[in-house]
Amino acid sequence: MQNDNDNQQVEPRKPLTAAARRALAEADERRRTQKPLELPEELGGRGGAEPSRFGDWEINGRAIDF
Image 1 (cartoon, helix red, strand yellow):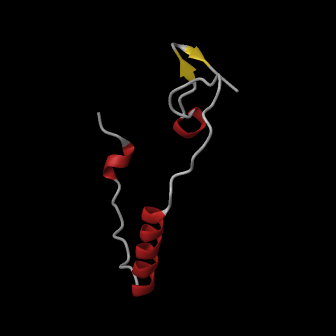
Image 2: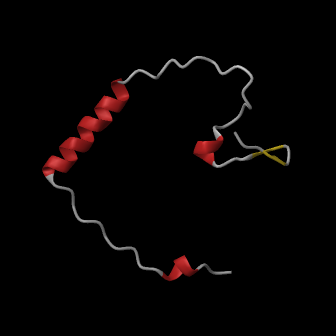
């Protein structure tokens, strides 16, 4: 079976300017040096992946909501 998206042409991206490459390198360096957040552990939480981020709104076949 073929999707409608299979026939679409992907437009080539424009080359990045020197300033854009420099900004991306600075952002990458900033992400590497940033310490991860030390968040408190959730008590009584559902466990697993965060549903609002990953769209997983069910546990063992039951729909959950907050």
